[in-house]
Amino acid sequence: MPHHGLSAGVPAGPVRATISDAMSFGIYLGGILLITGGLIYAAAMLHAPLPWIVAGALVVLGLGLLMAVKATRQRDPSG
Image 1 (tube, one colour):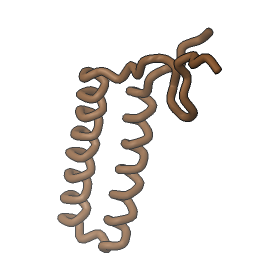
Image 2: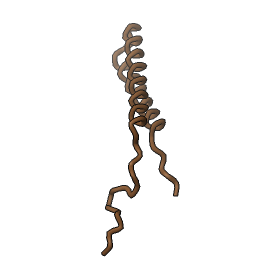
Image 3: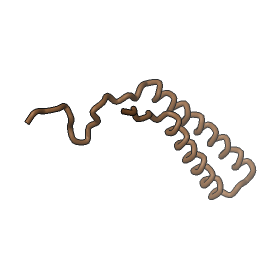
């Protein structure tokens, strides 16, 4: 049986992730961590209850992660 270069579970085309994509993702995450840290500090200075600080931090980190992935993901080639 001839081999056509396709393996089960392995994409046929090259992976197109580049260093700039990883850097963009890292910049997004760095910014989100900085913002989250600032919000945590401000909430602690305002004597907000700890469960609310943790919940708010998790929401901000989750939204930031979703935004970073959406902004830096690779589009599927059409065709």
